[in-house]
Each structure stands twice: as C-alpha cells, then as structure tokens.
Image 1 (cartoon, rainbow, N blue to C red):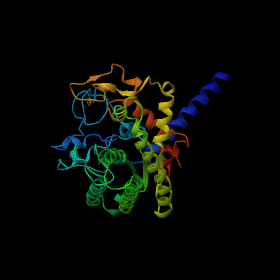
Image 2: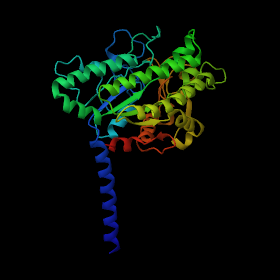
Image 3: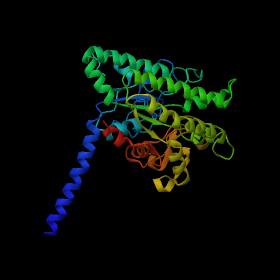
Image 4: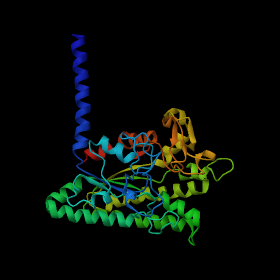
Length: 358
C-alpha cells in the first residue's frame, strides 16, 4: 500500500511539473531578441567590417557543434538557454534570414548585435553593429512580412503572446567612460533611459506585449576593466553609473506597464545577482571570477580571445569566458535565475510566470 501511494505521488508530482513547464512553453509561440553581444547569436557574422565578432576559434569550443557560431562564448549564451526553457529553438539571426528568399519569421528572430548600444553613437574602434533604434526598425520590417503572410488577426495574436527579450546598455557605458563626451554621466544615463523608453513604446505600438528586461551588469568588474587597475580591482566609477541606470530603469518599466495597455514584463536585476556571485563564487561553483578563460596577458585580458590566445582547460569554474563576456556556465546560471528565480532578483514576476500569463 505504501509503495502504491509513493508511486502515485511521484507520478502526480512529475505530471504536475511537466504540465506546468509545457503550459509555460506553449503560451510563448516565438521569441524576438533585441540586444548586444550577451545575446547575439551571429548577426555580426554578416558585417564585412566589425570588431565585435566571434565567428572564429576558440569561441564555440563547448558548443554542440564544437564550432564558432558568432556567439561571444565558449558555448551557448543566455538567449539559447531561455529558448530551451520555453520549449523553443533559438531565434535565428535576422541578417541570416534576410539572405533567404523564403525566410520564415513566425518562430522568432534575433536582432541582437555585438557592440550594440541604446544610443546611436558608434565607437569607431568597434566598427559596425546594429544600434537599438535600428533593431526595432528591423522588427517593424519583420512585422510587415508577418502581416503579408499571416494577416492582421494572426499576426497580432502571435506577437501579443511572443516574448521580447531586451538586453542592452553595457556598451553605452563602456563607450562613455572611454571617450568622455561633453555631457555629464547623469545626463548620459538619462539619455539612455529616455531612448529605451521610446523604443519600448515603438515595440508596443507594433504588437509587443510580453517583455524580459535585464539591467546593466556589474560592468566595472569585467576583466577588460580590472586589467586597467594595478590592483586588479573593479572600476567603481562605471559600476556606480551602471547601478544608477538600473535604478532609473526599474521605476520606468513600472510606469510603462501602467501606461501601455496589455504590457507585462519580467525584470532581472543582473547587477545585484552578479554581485552576489562575485562575493560568493564557490557557492555557484566558480574558483575564478577575475580573469578571463580565453585571452593572453594579465588576467587574460590584454589580448582578446583570438585564435592565438590561450584558454583555460576547465571553463566551468570561470565566470568570464573572455575579457567582456560570461562563460556558458555563467549564462546558464543567469537563465535559471530569470526563469525560476525568486522575487529578490527577478520581478515583478519571473519568466515562467510571465510565459504562462494570458
């Protein structure tokens, strides 16, 4: 009798868990990704002149194909893991699809581009990338194609249920503190927020309803910033303004939800979550949180992750893959926190709850 009861409860638990996951996945038919290199899956591969590229070794060494794909990672990035959690294939790069005659956009598209910024200013060092405003414009082009293919009712239904991932802002701050333009840090951050506000409204105007936003990470602690400090410590100035940007973003999103009909969102406080990992790395399985895995020189951050660089044998114990980007392991930890995380870091609801929302 006891064994029968145990089997029953185990089956019930597994069925309930599977049904919940299936329900969340089925309520999101497509994912549209807007952002930078943290979620780029290969758009920059199609630029003839662009510094932010990752379509060469040793990138992709732990990807299923063992090949570089354009992801700034040793393997998958957070966009891949979030897609998996929602039961979907990774959204393909927009620039890969536009080269095809009969490209299909109804399963989602990634517009993310390494080096992308919220503001349109371009860092001449980095060359080509797709800024936020252009990424949103490209989405509007995709919507027009969906209208032609599916008609208005089906397109509106598809987009209202789809997930729009927005991960951008780090490159704006990197650029500001590198070139120091004639505007105060406060004014610059305010410009970032006002521009993002406008583009969220554009996305909403053209059908987006469900959003995932991440704040700007602890960008002053990436190896590229630490290596500039003789002590290897973080750049606290850029961290301060990253936190100020995030402090402005949270109430802005709350206000937009009240203003824009049908808008719902998840916000991931990546800054605080990343700080927690840096302060307690062993809790998350990391033994190295300062140095990059792939690169050369001090902290493996003097020479980028090029084919001539060296890479660590165990990528799972490193937080950073290269001088800017997280390892696949870190990306998976971020995705787990976004999808099923507590309200301490993921709010007002987590992604599982957002996906299941009507």
